[in-house]
Length: 141
Image (tube, rainbow, N blue to C red; front, side, top):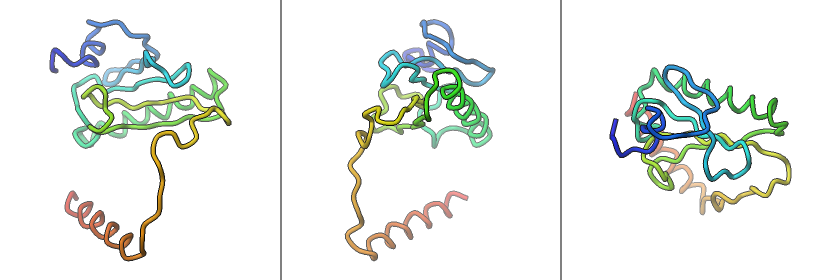
């Protein structure tokens, strides 16, 4: 656990946070700069930088907590839904894996603000990208 990691400090209770949920392996707390009230960050308590670095055995339990928090937003905050997102390196403000769970409501203004969407120039381009990803996924098995 890097001493300078803000989220490790929060997990070790050396820095304050508005904790929503905690278990042996994960911690959920309110983002101090929320998109909307109730915007939470879910972290593993052990230092892991990205989703790719998270041990496979921890993926299910961590996302089970994400699912629980998303449901709680609907029940506890009367949200109509939620947005669940993970940044890996790019736009990752703290180099510690964290899952954003954000309460959503229709017409809340978040429509498309994260990224511009486009189309593949050709079917060949799409197939080339698909084949590269398929090969890479197969190589990880």
